[in-house]
Length: 208
Image (cartoon, rainbow, N blue to C red):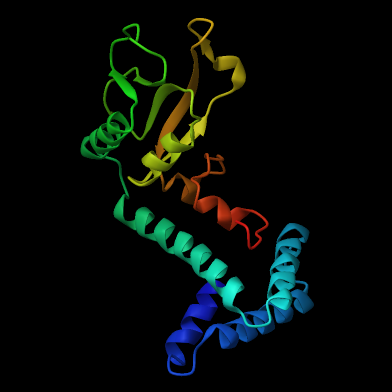
C-alpha cells in the first residue's frame, strides 16, 4: 500500500499533497478490501487503516503516520541489504553503544558484576557463527537492547522463561539468541520487535 503510494508520488510529484495521498491510499485500500484476496488478519488491519483515513478528511495526520511506517519499512530493507552477514566489528559497535548507555558488558568469562543496573553477558566473548547466545539483565527493560542490536542488523530471539538464570534476589538473567536480520527471509522464528518496526505489525492509531 505505502510502496504503491510512494511510486504514485514520484509519478505526480507536482500535484502530490496530503489530501491527494489520502485519496489515493483510501481508493487503493477499498479496492483491495473488495477483492477479498487477503486473509482475515490482514483484512482487519486494512479496515483499521480505512477507518483512520475516513476520520482524517485533510489527510494531514494519517499521511504523517503512514510516512513514519514507510520509513520503518525502508529502514528494514536498508539494514537487510547492508548487514547481509554479521561481523565482529558489528558486535563491537553494539557493545560499545550499550556500554555508553550504562550497560556492564562481559565477554567470555563470567565475573560477579559490581552493580545490577544493566548487564549483558556473552558466553563466547565474540561473534563466531550466525547464531550466538547472550544473557542480559536490565532494570529499565530490554527495549534499548533490542533497538541497539537492530541498528547493526542483528535481531534478538528471546529464550523461554524456564531458561532464565536467577543469580540472586535482584538479578535474573534472561537468555537470548542473536541472529543476523536476514533470518526473517529464511525462517519462521519470531524475533523481538524493535520500537519502530512494531508499527508495521500492529493496529495503528494517531497516538502511535
